[in-house]
Length: 393
Ligand code: SAH
Image 1 (spheres, rainbow, N blue to C red):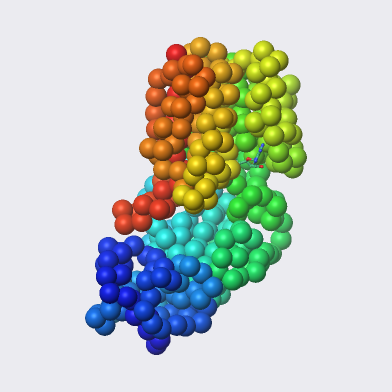
Image 2 (image 1 turned 30 degrees about the horizontal axis):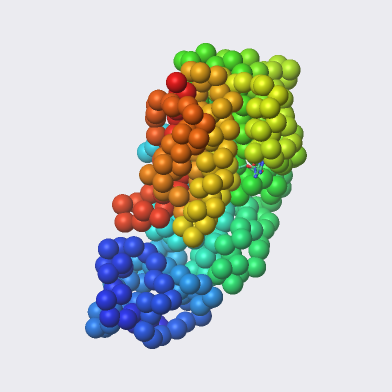
């Protein structure tokens, strides 16, 4: 077994069970991509077993802090079984959920979503890449699913020196599926959809939106960055009369329109705009249109803290426009999924948007990712999705 020794003082983060070792913390030792290494403190004491990624600034990701634990097929079976068991206890109101959420489930770089009887996975780090066949078998054994589609086409693979890889890993057949979320039916294509196919992290916020739309009697709803229209279906289910979905992806919007019909709503109540959100908000404002509820669920503007300043301006701009477009008493659900913008910074950005718009609002609720996308207490970096429900004064 190869070992990697840290520089003096660099053991602190592993001692706190934070799973990353950065390149700059290492005094000596190297290994191949995905190879299991023993990580030692400067004094030679054991800290963790991990996987080495020579191409990445995150040089080692810890598998285990227990010196007695062996990193083998049984290890992956245990970790996956624990992750699956945790989801079973959550009683998720859908047949689609996140089964493995990377670092939070002790499987750094592995994302697995379940869509009915089909699994869709991303292998995003050298360690899980190396153990892919073992992980695939363990996933089928733990879930009883027979099909596993690989969606390792995220750009972060590049940071690990890995090429994109997509296709069936186990099983085969149709990649288009129908899932049930709350009472709604939604279609997902694990080959064509974003990420593993769908944004499961917003599941509970979509239901909450339906409830708030009903409670406040919102009639005209604008769903910005709608993707396949999950929040649009929620709005219609909540009693909205007219819903507009805005996204820059034509295929996503076609699916949004199909979802309206699939759930039994009159297609005339839904409009799909294939356009840039920022430009659309300005155009609607200039045209004098107003809405009773608006959702802003943009893509990651700030992947890391280094992008936070530019991202802050972009978030502030769309939030300012949305606050202006709302009727008094209107509802805004605004999100950021940027790891580089934490909840308190996001709150400040939205406050700034309100100041610029000259409107204030009641902060109704703070929102976060659904609990099958957990954060662990030792890995705060895992917390990425944050949102605010605001009622315009
Ligand atoms: N709210 C969605 C998920 C949104 S993901 C849900 O509940 O499923 C972000 C979406 O923003 C993607 O669908 C992407 O196509 C879209 N997008 C990215 N940049 C955009 C832009 N400038 N204007 C409009 N849509 C954009």
